[in-house]
Amino acid sequence: MRLTQVLPPTACDFEALKYGLTQYNESFTGTVFREKIAAFVKDDKDVVVGGVLGEIHWNWLHIQGLWLDESIRKEGWGTKLLAHVERYAVSKNTLNIRLETTSFQALDFYIKLGYAVFGELPNMPQGYTSYFLQKTLSVTAK
Image (tube, rainbow, N blue to C red):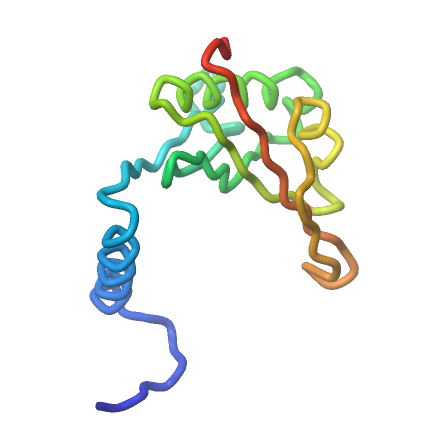
């Protein structure tokens, strides 16, 4: 046995760790549905100008990022993207969503759409605050 240096992992080592962690967790939870998802806003030339990335895991949708090009902000695309993935989550019997945002990003936007802050981390990154939000959907989400 030996302890390695702290370095970026190889793909093989990373997968071995992920596999071991998944096996351990599922020994308690049973097999868990897991799916990476994304939806995009594309312009008439099929160029991505926005989108949302997430993963469904343990009956929660974790929104890992939502981005819109400056040229299409304030046009309702963020609201459309979130509603789109929320409907998809409901179709997968996933009624809980969590996400993170920082004080220079879109906290008010998420609160306006029904997300509630359940935690915050000051100086993440330095000089800013990261907020952790959640939302519970109803099965009638449209």
